[in-house]
Length: 337
Image (cartoon, rainbow, N blue to C red; front, side, top):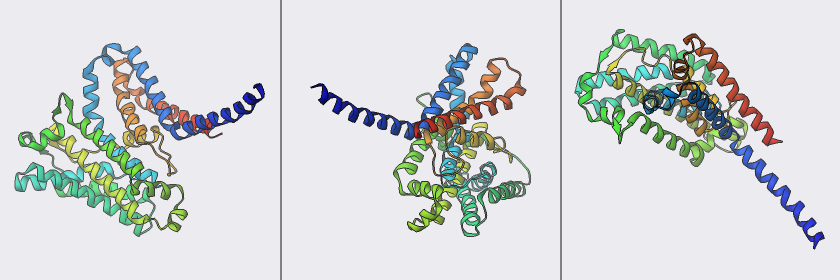
């Protein structure tokens, strides 16, 4: 009997170890960002309980974080495919030019929202054209279009801002920046976008193609994957998300100003990379980006609540980014052994 047990146990133990290693390898990024998120929130709660145990701070996060988190989600897919997009802050403003033009012409806010998203799609299509057809690196292209779109916005509106007070009476206003059972609609849209991005990235051919393209472009070409079409589509989706975020932001403050997207570049990028998406492409996590966005969005509020001088913000931003990325790297190496 003992010899039988000796024969069985060695066979079972390695299988368990392999299962644990496989689970860790698959979910290392999600584990890392979740641990970092919990630790950060515990620090905030312990150091500033009056703020972080009050529901009002979470309502504020639900209203403000989605403006860059929405873009970070689609940007995750772009980076998974091996590209990057730095032009989305300007697309946020350029999309609003389309919104203003249609809203002032027709008085229809809902149609103006669609026009803004359409402008964002065209901007993303232009990025995709230069990257995939002209063969210029995405970093170079989107740095150029960041300035191009910003300049075009200023020219088209003559540097002016526009009040959007009348839009408050529209259905679109309530759907985009109103409340749903007490929850800010910005957060509802973010959750829907996260679900859609997850399905697209992990359950749709576009996402599967993006992973292969980012991991091994040569293999993707040999497999007959439509590389140009896939990469271009991801730029288009990012442009649409940026324009949509620009509309929500502008409606929230009832004003459009040409610099509407400024300040969102670094938070969006930090959300993606803190979340565990590989800068080299081929690997990304929607959950990580979602959680990472709220980590990045909470830092400034946490610093103020803990009565730390505001000029420590960049220092703490950098430290959190490095710590989170280090946790990802350690877990990844640990489970891949």
